[in-house]
Length: 417
Image (cartoon, rainbow, N blue to C red; front, side):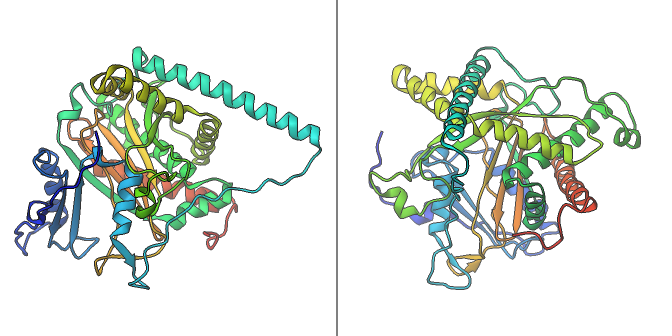
């Protein structure tokens, strides 16, 4: 397969529905509109993208634009780069937005040569061991290893059900405060908040299943022991990390390649009620630090590529589908613009990426934009019938972790850089 030039009729791609300006509940209208979109697919007779422009004032924006793009055109990094290429800084209409880059820490150079060699050998051995164990778990998951059948694990055929998209915007400064106080990354904080929020939500669901009233459910644990709950975490494996300029991605021979360059990481979630909210943070950091010392994403990508070349697209798709159906959810965190941007002159209030068609009953995306973090849920109604409650649990978990940090004097309120 290869890219070929084609003519684009914008009338086939830009859709402006007629909306009653007196719609009683604009937020619910938007939610239902996106839900109905997920019941359909983009016609294969045209390039696989659409832009829906809704003249609808919601609680967060004066109007809404929905880009619907087939995942075959690119992964999250590619599509976010495409979006940013269409935007400009609010403060400078002629300047493209700042492309966030990953900072690489410099080596301190301390210690003797022997200690340096010992440390290097230890790191390499750990990398090899972790990678081997992660690849073994990946293969086992593809063959037989399944997650626990919790209330949020989607049923067979979940990829064919429509999705409800809900989002909640929280303060990125709050997440930075936690990050700086406990020497973490934003990824660590996002995972900690997700683990805490899912634990609260599942505890309530299990309590309801056991006939426990809501008040009692909040006070004691109703969770089964030894829950195996994993997410397929999508990792950008390009040599150049982060969101890239669109021109760089289109240039031949560049490290910032356009397309789907993502590997799978099977990320285990700890589901339990903790008396100390900071325990979620410590567990999340330990999990992510362990995954950083592994080449799991590169090898899972390579395994998928090998299956594609040897056995064809159907077998490669079956492998991916089997891994996903044996896990519970999908999780990702994308870095967005650090300053306010405009889309052809229109200031953007928030960015909320998500997807549908995956065989999970739940997908959680974190997307940063200026000083905000938007948490986006894509849910199967039968699996997560109350997604707004899950958003409440995630938001409350962030607040509890932040309050615990401040109560112990670990950070000042203005420590958010």
